[in-house]
Length: 409
Image (cartoon, rainbow, N blue to C red; front, side, top):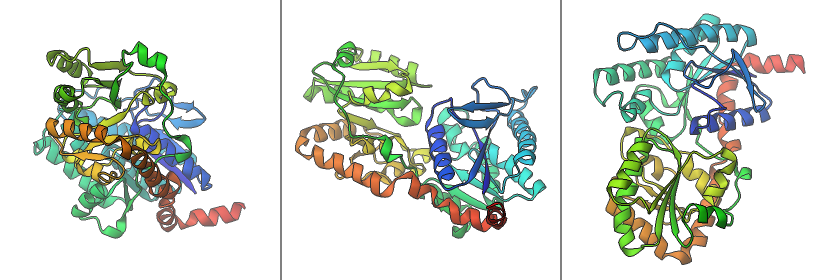
């Protein structure tokens, strides 16, 4: 089986998107499939037309030129560029399946090339482009751009030979757009459980350097996007400090909201209680996890967070970490309140402070919570089980792949 994946971006960039991609590719290779990889012009890391990173070979797509002008022209130019490069790569590697990963800017070129070359096309939705644009502030829900983007997304979903998605929330939304249930398969977010060990001992030197000696540490490790709700975490801190003055917040990472969060901490008089570490090397992330007593995932309620399940809470549970999270749909699909984590009312700083306080009061329950989270991931959210769900769809869409394999055996 030869599968050509069309991706928004890839390593060496680090994101939840790239980590999910690598997990999928590793498991597909274990199944004996040959995977090939093309990134869109949105992959911004400097590179040549082809690049090998950590043993993975990627075909790159150069950025289009002269795309500025009326709204939408840049996206049209991007899709044309992706289509041209995809046609070239597909003719070279002769895949049995074109596997386009969101956004829809990858799906449309894949559908066009697939029809031209007679190759089945599957489309994997990790989030809807129109909803991500709302969070990024480039449009608003219900705007003309939003409606047009949604229409393009729906068109791609209906034209694909099969649709994959990451969770039940997105599956329900896709079905509501007219895609039959038999044409949708959920490939849940998961973790490589063998890569995660239960939380280790804090590095006291690092803790001292960050001013956290003797503190109870509430932390977030990841990208600072508006939908993550880190502003709510800072809003909740003053109330929490009234009953627990030893609490400190550590924010590890960076992103679009970093400057706004630093300004908010200053305005709330929390400069001494909130530590911004900046981005840290991936190899160092574990040291920062080990500093944190309770991880916080205070996502705001919006279409993106209600529909999409995140990866970070699963990674936390795999490490046996304690966590509090807002009760958006994406979290409720992963976290069982009082069993594998603690949920609170989304958007309420008071509820967040109360949830943290309640969890800190229940130290006797911590071993049970840690073990339950780890057990959930081991049993239900491992990549081997998730990626196995591709096989029946691939086999149905590309029966010649099996014949080719027998012929070369």
